[in-house]
Length: 175
Image 1 (cartoon, rainbow, N blue to C red):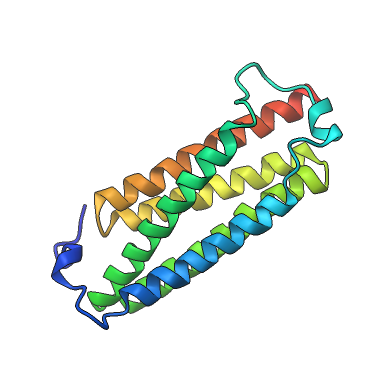
Image 2 (image 1 turned 120 degrees about the horizontal axis):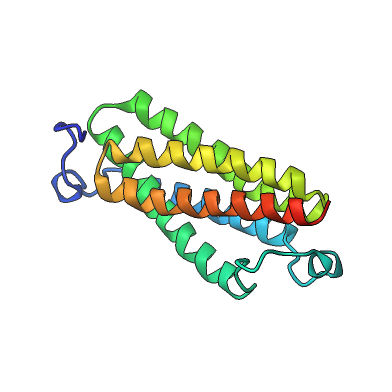
């Protein structure tokens, strides 16, 4: 259920309201996680190419497109959620969301290290599961400020849940 205290974006984004600062801060965190994850990922490496993968494994060209879209959604939805919580006086809730987002972004970047760098698909599957749970939690929190924010982060939760299933299946196929 949406809290009636939360107003629409146009109702409370006056100049100097901190919206730009919030967007830049969240964006920097997301770009940092994406950069670290990208540096740790090696889909063209011999090890990854040698793994058996399920028939439903997407082609490697799909991943950068999906992740770029998801990172944009994470940035916009999270910044709007944080800003609206702060603007409506729910500062502790905003800080709690920020902490949950920071943990999520560390988990996000860390998955690539577990799977690609450590070359431990089972660790990647566990990491993906924890990331999916964290993503579901972010979507739930964001939905309290507006269903579109919850839906946007819900697409991230759906993708990380898919990644959990995929990592688990790759683990099973490569015992």
